[in-house]
Picture (cartoon, rainbow, N blue to C red):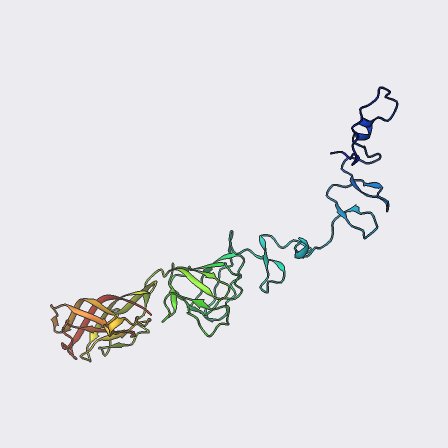
Length: 348
């Protein structure tokens, strides 16, 4: 691209090349004294031209005010978002991402909410833990290895979109995670699938939460081993138990609670019942939430040959074990009583 006169002459050239001919008038003009890459600007008030020479690579052309020629300068200014910048004067830390802040007023650097995972220092916490701060950095994995049980009610420091996975690497301890607990602050609460009891992690179990900007949402839960509940359960039907013959074990999978039990010892009641850790779902029509299978029963001096059944009412957490399907049939309140069976039900 060249610079020519606005007016172009149509008169043909004459033979004398020493004169300025119409073709010379029409030809491109050249800029004298400018280097390659220079910028041409108006140089004076009457329209004269001037060249701003190109200098160091990477410099930018900056206005120096009205009536003053611009110049190339090294760009050190912090430009606002409105002017096409970030409003930030330095880079963030490694693996951080640029995002809009919580008030939508500026940009900021923050831990990445997706991508690489961070393996946090193994946790050995025990007892009640509110607003737990596990050392989140992006998506985070924590191995829990406490010397006794732990009960988490909330997690602090979440970033929207962030994942947290916890694994129980103990040999025999249990970690629990409470649903929407008032013991932790707003913004740190856990939202579980089963809401009528705590979500447990037995040895080998894992769970994953994702922070939605308000709460931690449970995405995946694998309990691990079945959990022994006999020491906590209220059991009716025996005065005592034969050593090693009292156990109630359960597993939570989503909202399904699986339980199997063996209870043996001297009988002192005509009924049998045991409490479980989750309240049952309130089904339509008020029908029992579960009819479980009694696989083996011994009553006083005789094995029972008719099939027994276990029943749980809607909105209940007590499993009643009947010696037969007929609910009027009772157990004997003396002698040895043995009951073994299994059941599952949908929790609230």
